[in-house]
Image 1 (cartoon, one colour):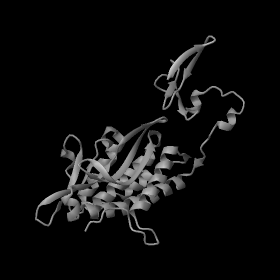
Image 2 (image 1 turned 180 degrees about the vertical axis):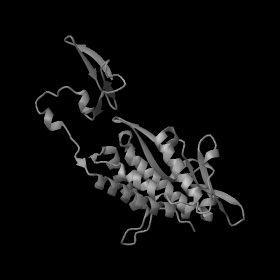
Image 3 (image 1 turned 120 degrees about the vertical axis):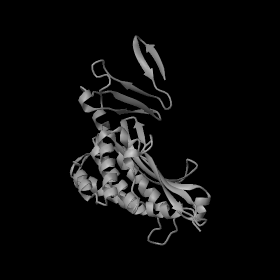
Image 4 (image 1 turned 30 degrees about the vertical axis):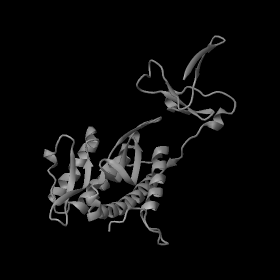
Amino acid sequence: MKIEKIDGELFVILEENDRVSITTQEQLGKNNITIAKNEENIDIFGDSNFINSIQGEGMLEKVYIPPIVSKEEIVDRCDKWLDKFREVYDIFSSLASSDKYIQQKVVLNLSFPTFFSLKGKGNSISLDLIQYGIVIQEGLVISVDETDDDIYNYLIANVLDYVLSESYKNTSINYLDMDWNYSFCLQTPTSNKKTSTTFMTNLSPLCDSTNHSRIVTSILGNHNLGVESKQIISNLKDRITSRQLSDIFTSSIDYANKQYGYIVPDSEGEKPVVLNKK
């Protein structure tokens, strides 16, 4: 990035991978416009409430206004992703508990990372096979903007409920006395009568938010009591509203569909692209 003064006017010259944010003293920390270099041109991101006017020949043609997506369609997209998540979880869980994967120290990992983008902050859900902390087989991921927290709440409740119902059927989790990083794992018996970790998750990113933490506690509490979490999940679904969906959300679903195609056999009998557990 270079700043030059030409004919008395100040120019900010963006170079490869450069971006700059512009705001006012009154809006500092609240609103800003982000300008990023995209090949020979630029992309502009911002909140319409912060922009007074846009002027210039042909500028209106450049403005993209995302369509309003109905609540029903948003829930449908979430549910389709969740169906794929459950299927991939079952496949990866079976692999991770096999002797070959245990010997190679391959573990099924469920994570809830936070991400930052040009448009702000958000949260993800990611399911992968890892070996010594390194992803060796990508599973499914979904990313949701921070402003769409109601969607994320619905997703994490469903994900946790399924994992607990499938892998911890007869196991209580002492979530009130978890270690400092709020993590737990699944110990699976092996052929040599020992146990090995086959699944792990760290819930600490969820506990940074009061809403997320409350959902985690409710789901874990119901599990320990043997109570279904249908009411919690139904209430979270009801809170989802129609809106403009972010590119991050839609592109992450598209990417998940691609990953699903690599892992799960298609209707023509194509073999999944995962390691053989035998």
